[in-house]
Amino acid sequence: MTTHDIVDVQTTDCCIVGGGPAGAVLALLLARHGVSVMLLEAHKDFDRDFRGDTIHPSVMEIMAELGLSDRLLQLPHAKMRQIQVKTPQDTVTLADFSHLKTSYPYITMLPQVRFLEFITEEAQKHPNCQVVMGANVQELITEDGVIKGVRYRGGGGWHEVRAILTVGADGRHSKLRQLGNFTTIETSPPMDILWFRLPRQPEEIEGGMGRFAAGHIVAMLDRGDQWQIAYVIPKGGYQKLRGEGLAALKTSVVEIVPELANRIDNLQDWSQVAFLSVESSLVERWYRPGLLLIGDAAHVMSPVGGVGINYAIQDAVVTANVLTKPLQNHHVELKDLVKVQMRRELPTRIIQAFQTLIQKRVFAPILTSNRTFQPPAWLRLPILRDLPARLIALGVFPVHVQI
Image: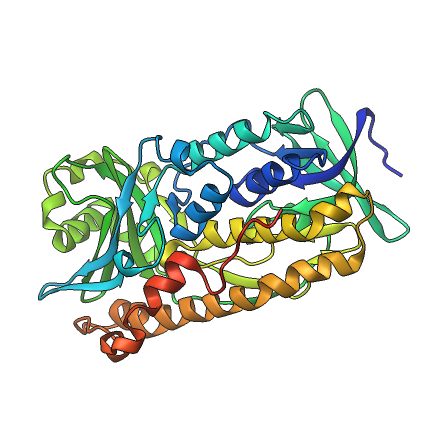
């Protein structure tokens, strides 16, 4: 029994906690089929710095199945048709999407805030979908061992949402994962990332580019009039870098990417730099009676390949495919939740293994030695050459909207 003064109690079929890509897309998919949905987002808007901005062909295919792809592509965006890295000696193509059998043979570079606004606006066209911003979930409602909803703070006090199913889609620092006492299996990638932005000139390459030099990795992602820059550092190296000072960071960036010399002084303070501790983990069991975790709440992804958003959305599609009918019938059994994990755990494990391979065999040697980057031998084998592009762009198994 709660000791809080509850302002109101609302009921819904499905309460989704977290308004990121997984939660927003799931809300839309369920609402389209008459399921009452309440989407709770802790922040008051979707605009956060350095969220992933990559929409891969797998998600564009899903958007096409929903009849939304053409309108989505009317939003300002860029296209990345290849993942290339420049070394002091050469330019190497790590993934070429142009050969893939898809109507969208490129990665769409679209600010995540625009994508989330687009999806939630579509969802709210259905009167059975409610989006609540500034809803900070603090408690699970548990009765006889079954999760019956959540309590959140916001908008004048404490509120209670009672639901047939609660879905935790609240990201890598998931509150619901913590409240539900879920057990995770963690790995420790050998790197961390500093994010910052610098002006981008109109004539520069569209989409993005990576730079590898002895001891250093820089990735540049196209955000229209800005480069979103990832400066990769060895795990645990952030304090050492801070101690060397911002000037040392700027000098290092210009040594790796000389063409940024004429704008590096836009970086004037550490407050412009965001630190990301790279993590990778998998929840052993994604569900409890009445509660399901999806997206980063169930599996924190490394940023390698930028696949986190796309796997989260694929989770949402599978969740909707499996659970729409049970929710329409107002009865979700544990076996229904098991089906979601069974369909999504293997592809998640495979892509995380692929990310670990790239981190250990490509990134770690560059960051920890003065060796010049050499493409792995398997990238030169015709039978394997397109594998990175397929894994990054389309995922392990195709996921389609079936409802």
